[in-house]
Image (cartoon, rainbow, N blue to C red):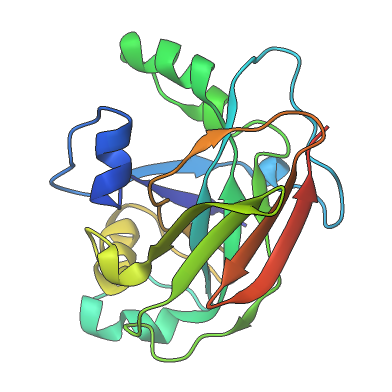
Length: 201
């Protein structure tokens, strides 16, 4: 199973971190060990002082594909949910300043959280995602605001990686990312329906 992630797919999020809006998708991967087991709390690692939440729309790959054309992309995804891409922002900033890869800041154990899956209707339909922290909304966005639509993301990613059944694609986070601290409770919503809950320790 691959966890493929897209960075800066919402203009407002790229701008809030002072990043350039990319001309092509920014792609990185998390190892399968990054997946937080269901119902487990997220434990802040001892080597970071600044972990941020990032809520994302996530799709699941349904069959093997390579060099997929955008018009056929919907045939390769069969389910959707929301997910959390926890990011050690202090470490990421350090790595970025040195021109180094982000994996240590993005792919550490427990840094990927998946909600409950549901069937995917028409992929081009807009889907609304939202994150609450301690009962207050901190992030929300729509797939209609993607810089790169899902069909084009699938096509782009499949140029470089063979997609296999069970792989997941995190599609980018909207503006509003922020720190988490022990005791926080996060809840992610897809189209108004609660899909994930995680506590922070």
